[in-house]
Structures are given as C-alpha cells and as structure tokens.
Image (cartoon, rainbow over all chains, first blue to last red; front, side, top):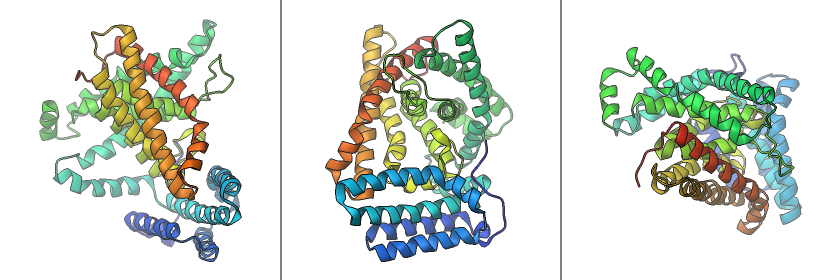
Length: 209
Length: 187
C-alpha cells in the first residue's frame, strides 16, 4: 500500500507529530469561529505558503488534493444554492485552508511516527486498563499485512464466479470472502501468542475476558 | 482483549479496506452501482458484534488518519477528517458499535432464519441509517452552517442506498453466522 507520506527533511518533517496534530486542531477551531472572508483568505494563504515551502512540486500537490477539492467544490455549490454567495465563499475558503494544511501534515509525517504518537497517546488509557497501547501498533501492522491477501482472495472468488458463468452479486462475493478470511484468525492468534509478542500477563488477562 | 479478538478485528479492518479497492458492484435490479466499503462497516457490526466490530472500524479510521489512502477512491489522510462530511466517516465507528450491540441482543443462534435476518436488518437500520446519518447530518449542518433542515435534504439522497445495504448486510450476516458463527450471544 502506497502511503501519502512524502520523504524529505524540511522543518515540518522534523517537527514532532503531536505538535503538528495539535496545531491542525487549533487551526481548524480558529477557522470555524470566524466567517470573515479576509481572515479566511489569509488562512488559505498561510496554509498555501506552508505547503509551497515544502517544495513538493505541482504534480504531487494536485494528486494529493484533487479528490478533496472535488468534495469541497460540491459542498460549495450546495451552499451557494441554499445560503447565498457570502456563506459559500466562507465555506470554500475555510475548507481549502484546512484541506491544504491537513494534506501537508499528512505528507510530512511518516506512518511510523504516527503510530508512535498514537501509542503514546493511548498510554493514559492503558493506565486505567482500557486498552494495551502496544496492541495498536500490532493491529495496524496486521491490517496492512492482510489487505493484499484479502484482495487476492476476492479476485479468486470473482474468477470462480466468472468460470461458472455466475453473476457477481454482493452476497455471493462477500460471504465466502469473509468466512475464508476470518477462518484464519485462530492460526494467526496462535502464532502471535507462540512468539510471545503481546507478553505472558496480557494473554492470561485476555483469556478471562 | 484476547489475541483472537484483536486478530479478528484486524482481519475485518483489512476486509473493509479491500472492499474500498474493488470496483463498485452492480446489483442487477437497480442501475446504480453500490460501493462496498460502507457495506463492510455494517458487516463488521453484524458479524463480529459491538466490541470487535467497533475496533475493526476504529482501525480503519486510524489508518485513514495516519495517511494511508484506504478509503474508496483512494482517499485518506487528515484532510478527510476536516471536511464537513467527516461525520459520515467518524459515524462509521458509532454505527458499527450500535449495529453490533443490537445484533447481539436481537439475534440468537436457535432462532429461525427469518427472525435472524429481520433482527440483523433492524440492527443495521438502527446503526447504519439512523445513527450514521444522524451524526452525518449534525456534522454537515455545523460544518457548512446550512442548518439542520437543508443538511437533512442533502442527506436524503443517500438513505435508499443505505437501506438496501442494510438488507444485504442482514442476509450476509446470517449466512456468515450459519457458516462460521462469531457473534457473541446475549439474548
């Protein structure tokens, strides 16, 4: 799976992920309390300037933002029709500023950094016994590992449909896909426990629940 | 949480991600293709129950947040969470938990097929239509400042499709329960 991360060594790459996420949250809160086109246009300029200072190139920027810009355009047209041009302009500027800044942070923070940040963020929850922070990284790794396998299985089931001249229906595709995939859960869980990845104490805890 | 539950949630998250990568499936009797990814969210609740189904969807959302393009159409990254439509994304988690909770209560293994399918359908409607669209509308109204009634009108177009998906999820949920039962029993 190709991530949206862009390798580099800019000042934003070096900034801690927690700080970047906090900054984005503050930025979005500030944008939602104002509707002034001047302030919002300034925010768009600021986000654009930060993005431009990363020097990703026009092609990559377009590739990152085109889907999101389509959603923003649809929302803007709806607002224009329902609420008039002033509201539509505010919605458009606000969303473009947010989308550009968010995409820039996504592009400058690697998956590993994010997982570390989330794990650190989950520590307080671990202390009150809600989750085990290390499980999160394990689970994310498992998902990424199994997506290609699920896709291959889907293609095999689809080919089987074709070979027998059956129509591809959601039901006859999804049910075997799900059963075939989930049936491996026991083996995978046994393999994880056999390697002691989650630690002895935790396994005993798990057996009780 | 037992290792097996963690693995089941991760595997289902992988299924939801994979369903976003496959082309939309045509249904035959209506001319509109359906995107399989939101169907996957309903299936997570119906098949795994509240706890594991919720975790599966939460894992997908974490993958989106950390910049993997795992949503249908290759969308992903933090930008998807700042749009006014993010309520439908965050709502997936609450929908899966609610569908799982209701399924655990409504459906028992000894019931007849019709009762089981109806139970799953009701659960999918409560979580996947009422809760998901409720949250989506609230977030949309707040994010665009259009007001609740206009946000509701914009939302209406997607409700028939999701009712249909709830029906598919109910049938698939029952079929999986017969073939490989996983849903915790509470009834």
